Image 1 (cartoon, protein in one colour):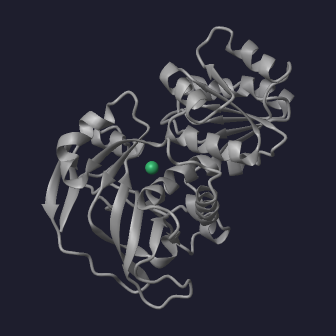
Image 2 (cartoon, rainbow, N blue to C red):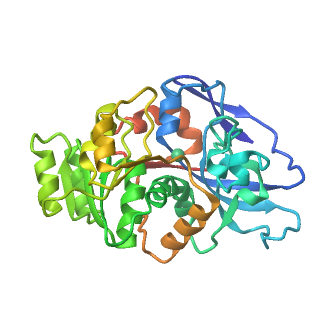
Image 3 (tube, rainbow, N blue to C red):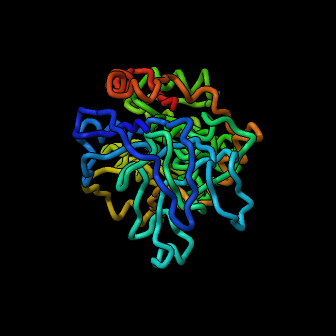
Length: 337
Ligand SMILES: [Zn+2]
């Protein structure tokens, strides 16, 4: 089979591989669609810390079961699945607490181990999330929506609260759509006018603010009737944005960092104490998040139509990846296998 390997930063190549052979507890799946993630783009540009080359990328997968043993989950050949790409050690302390998403031995498919940018892969059976009612394209979007959704889960947002979501890339978008589906009041902020317009016109976000407007905090307070939002979620991974969240959350409020910064941030401790803020990180997503997001996509409360802005065939990845990855209107590119 023809697989796509990122040989070194800036260079993909087509390699010939044998179809993988599954081991006990694994299924052989046919990959039909692959979502391109910011992680993949960073790896391509050599900006992904602790990343080993060569590597087969691809962790946002819409797949079909080809071979599987009898299993207690009723999964069978022909079933359509999304794949939870976080391979955890079940004996680790985080896994034992139900937090497989942040297991200390975590291996992410397509990041720490070779992923799905190829026609066939083997995966542990428990990482398959079946949804025959969704298209392969929708299945390939589930993981990315789960990242933002897990941030909302961490925040314990209720429908009576207001959330400010900073950053409207795919992670922010997942958070926005899940918060809207909850019925909460959603305010988004970004520095890109193009993305704000997309949020207003395509996602129907009622309040989309320019994050670098000089009167940003006044605009935010106006929208909150003179108060501040109970929840602030950062999906930028930008130091300035993350440090600013402490000023943007209401007293008693919660801050969730979904975006990751490779460095340190600082905050004013008296401000944190005076407001009695709660700061949380959000990493990956849990199996329950996958089930929840699949349900929301299936019942239409999350609309995946606006997500896909670009497409390419798998064998065109070496030629087209860089160009597509640099398009200013890129939300999500899908690779067809
Ligand atoms: Zn991703």
